[in-house]
Length: 62
Image (cartoon, rainbow, N blue to C red):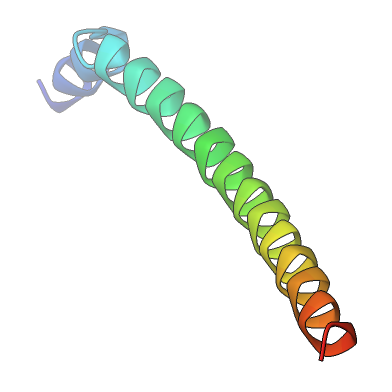
């Protein structure tokens, strides 16, 4: 009886689709986090460059 229960649980594939979708969502989320992190670093670098340029223009104009 217990053996039959374990065999049925082992062969049951009803939750398999949910696990696959969860793995896909996790992979896409990780890719988005990585992309946003790199993009934010690029934006900070651009802002810093613009700020330094404006500061040098203001210092040389005085």
